[in-house]
Length: 461
Image (tube, rainbow, N blue to C red):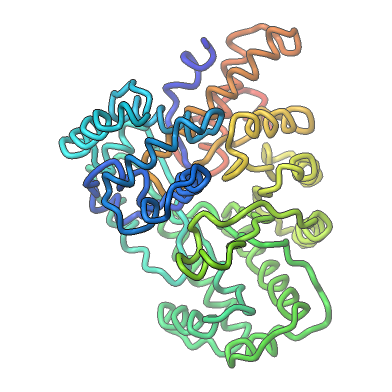
């Protein structure tokens, strides 16, 4: 464990992809109780409770917070091997100085300990401070106001740097209800009429400039499948059909999304914004609960769409135009690990270490074996030492325990290789590798944090 304690534990966190509410940082939100923190919107914990037969009343229903907490405490002992079991207890230890295992027998005592700590000192800002979060990036729609990020930046009492992630998914959703209304909202924010396809591109570029002025380092795009269709279809005609409420064909939708994504990729490249591409999420598969609770309620799963040809074509088109930005690729399907690592390797460039990355495990892949499998694939098919490390992909301010979880697994895996003679038994060399993946690579790749360059190999590539 020397690798973890000496080289990983104290490194600051750069959480380069999350969904936390920046207003809660600016307002230094205080929570009423631990159930509000853990169960207020955590679909992963909701899923676990449903697995254990908990009635919906005690998950998203009208039961009291204490009743919901007790229901979770009853469910958790069934979660042996589940990362939620590990993360829940890491959070108890790190934020509440509580070493009790959560169970029906300890629930009342833990409820009191956590609520006392929350009331006395554990606000959102204190959570960030305890977690040693140096910088975080959170998803924001281009039509949203970014005033809160300026407010945070100017508040000297906030030690964490907070940046917006440019997340224009709604501007590509020409095939979904509400597109016309969204375009009008974007038009109002930009102060210009958006009447044509070119107007839309101009508006997005304008908002991207504003995001960059507010510290934006990344964009984010999530797809069922990566769009790629370059049929000779006029995007302006498709755009006007969409805002008039006409239904589009799959071909028209994909052609429009392809064109917008090519334009945005070039804009990111020009401004030095890292592009994140995510796919293979199957959303809202339970129609009954989707109607009752809406999206992001715990009813998504892994998809198996094969998007490698489309992804290669898209990246290749940007590369051919001299406009491929630094990019991070993600698939929710762990079967795509080798595909994405190999894909990233085909688009490396000597001036930037890990220019295209196979990104961190997320969602269903964030368990111990999922992380080890991902790291092993990176090690076998790429240069592990160039990896930018973990992000939370979370809405919760206690989720930074995921970085500790990841770092411990990383150190354990490297330790295994050393013990087997598969990696040099040199604590300085392996320690630098751990430091880079835990912190320095992300600091350099995203241009955040106070860390300077890491190893000679990384800094010279």
